[in-house]
Amino acid sequence: MKRKNWMVKAKSGKLHQHRKRRDADGNLTLSALKKDVWTIFSRYIRTKECLESTGSVMSGKCITCGNVYPFQKLQAGHLIDGRMNAILFEENGVHIQCHGCNMFKGGAKVEYITWMKNKYGETEIERLRALSHTTRVFTREHLLALQQSLLFQLESLNREDPLVLEYRKKGLI
Image 1 (cartoon, rainbow, N blue to C red):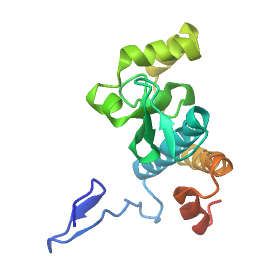
Image 2: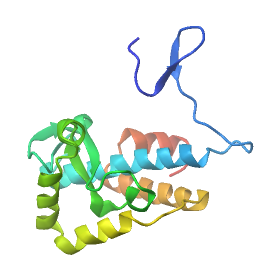
Image 3: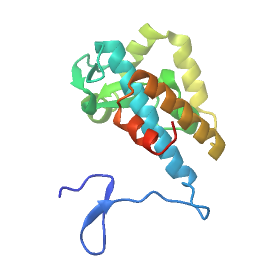
Image 4: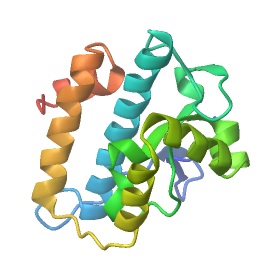
């Protein structure tokens, strides 16, 4: 079995899924919950922008190179690096990019900023830059509310999304 980034090797040498960390009450830790919310947020951004750019949830157009890629090859790329808490879930600062632009070209910042100026204007870019210098501490309640809101938004875009089906089975939507 090929090792994936979400798999760990047990002492026995077998690969298995990494268990999410939980606190003494059995709840996900804040960092594990934040990671879950990011997964939903990323899926929501990619789904929404695939629909906007191609009219399908199966593929989308990278905002920086303009090429169309299958959904699985797209990522939610931030305009401002650092995954700072203050801008982590800012919808206007995260858009679909192909793996090449987001990872290998460092986010293709020149093209990204040009695209952002055309879509939102300079004022929004400055707002995001200013916001990136602030500190934000997430609480469990805020992350759970954000998780619920994002799940409903994702469900409204694609009722058959595997993530939506998984959370529906868990009874969270």
